[in-house]
Amino acid sequence: GLRPMSLTEYVGQEKIKDNIKIYIDEHHNPGDFWLTGSQIFRLMQGVQESLAGRVALLHMSPMSQREISGLPAVPFTTDFEKLVEQSKSIQPVSTPEIYEKLWRGSMPGLVSGMFDDRNIYYSSYISTYIERDVRELSGNIDALKFNRFITAMAARTAQMLNFSAVAEDTEIDIQTAKAWTNILETLGIIFLLHPYSNNVLKRTIKTPKVYFYDTGIVCFLTKWSSPEITESGAMSGALLENYTVSEIMKSYQNTGLTPYLYY
Image 1 (cartoon, rainbow, N blue to C red):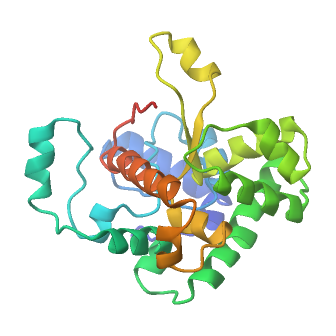
Image 2: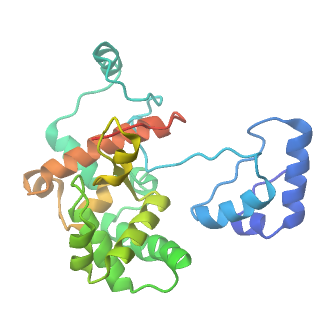
């Protein structure tokens, strides 16, 4: 007799949460309940208070190329023989086709064809989803400055992250730039890759590189108007690197593994 519920309905009904807790404790059958939502903070506030120790958290990134191609999720490996074996099930693509894919992006709404206009999709995505959640986390923000901030981050994709330069471009202070970076990372828009060191502490304090999970939003923010111009433009190398590293990252997340990646 269970039925799907919206996030708002779920969080707002304490009685239902108590019933879920009782059901889980009695049956111990993982997978009976799936709680999904784009607003991870509001979702987790409700879940952690009442279902602590009873939930597993899965990060859902934009779609990987294996997902788009209908292939099973396989974590990336540096074992050359395994890579050769995996490549046998994959249809090779040309360089222009790769830039078509990374320019188009890997958001489900675009991949499925639900939304035809890529520009309207990304414009709406930034103004309605990202800005809304940033406001929820950090209070009132200057929308123009935030747009400049995320654009400045996109222009630096696959580069070492200089917070001073980003703050200067955006006309905000360094602490705000760091806070907004943390929010974008928590929202699953970007991820940071730290330099490798034998000393674990040094890995976290040295300058990281920044990457976006979806290259389509990078191309949109940095105003590359077509796959052909993207391929021949000044950011072609950085975008290809971002595309590659994000695919490796998603290959681990989609198999439930923690990616230990460094540059």
